[in-house]
Structures are given as structure tokens and as C-alpha cells.
Image 1: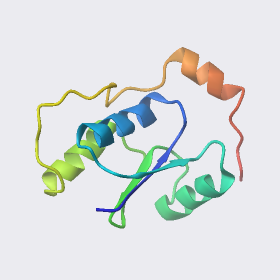
Image 2: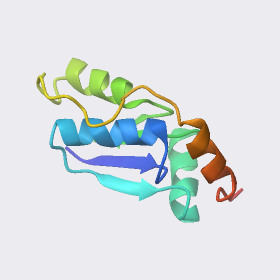
Image 3: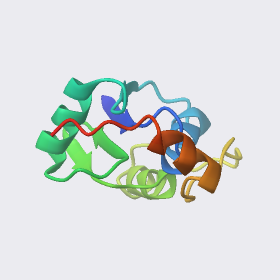
Length: 111
């Protein structure tokens, strides 16, 4: 399975996606959309919208998703088997106010 995850370095939603990847021990490409304008542009082009996280699994784009939504997609399509492992981070939670404030000073819009 080829997985490309377009994520922010720190973000509640992005950390939830990472937690699901770790829960199922999946290899994936973690693409930084904040510090690499080409990755952000690629995400927007492929997904047709500017919100993150976006996760591409074997060519299927899941746009603006939580870790919980990614997990549900993979389970319902037989891509992973259920397990009882607990994720290391909340899988359906926004950024904290502190994370938003930290990103506000660093976020750059590329187009």
C-alpha cells in the first residue's frame, strides 16, 4: 500500500493521522505542507481544495480528514485489520489554541 500524507508539522488533525499510521505500523510519506511550498501546491492540486490533512492511499485522495476518518476508510476497505492498540494521540481533535497561535506566526500561504 502506498500512502502519502500531506500534514502540518504540529497540528491536532495531523498528529491524529500520524497516530493511526503508527497504530497499524504503516509505512507512509509524511509531506510537510507548511515548510515546503511544493508539497502544499501538490496537495491542493491533487485534492482540489486547500484544507489539511489530506491522505492519498493507493491513488485515492482523502481530503481534509481526521485520523479517525482515515482509520475508518482503511478498515472498511480491508486495507488494515482491526486491532486493540491505542493511538498515541487523539485521532479526531483539532489543534489546541496554543498550536494555532504558534502556527499563526509561521504559516505562509503559497498561492
